[in-house]
Image 1 (cartoon, helix red, strand yellow):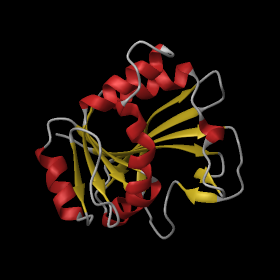
Image 2 (cartoon, one colour; image 1 turned 90 degrees about the horizontal axis):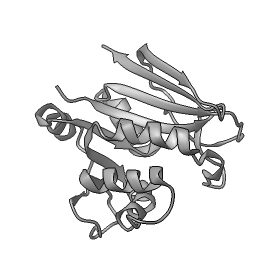
Image 3 (cartoon, rainbow, N blue to C red; image 1 turned 120 degrees about the vertical axis):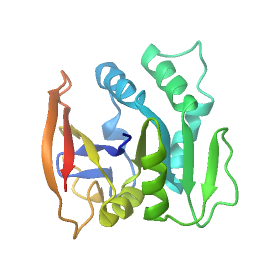
Length: 185
């Protein structure tokens, strides 16, 4: 059975980007990147909001023969997945295996996950907030970076209460800590 998974890189104070919208402080090193790649291999579909899609689509053009192996590997993994972009402002999408939806419908997303052969990822804190509020997220992966940014976009939305079970944790040489939780229903 496929799961709806929310993964995010965060600061110690719980933000995915700082107050200026930057996540330069969160660039993964080779060890973290390789670990993320292995998590991404389990996914068949990525659900994105407009902003994250516009950030991620660069992976469509990452050269196969340039740069660090973990980046080339991530590009291959990303290109192999289907993408659904939720945006009221985009008129089209520019990457293969991608469809555009103008409205996020939790019941349709849950049906997509229930019919999927592989896990589905909901990406971007704003879109994930909608999925969390609707109660359709099954698991969370948080990559906690040893930095405090003082404000920005929170990883978890206000007003949502979840019971969680810790499934796994891992500490990386860089000081990043991965926390993997299941939502308890």
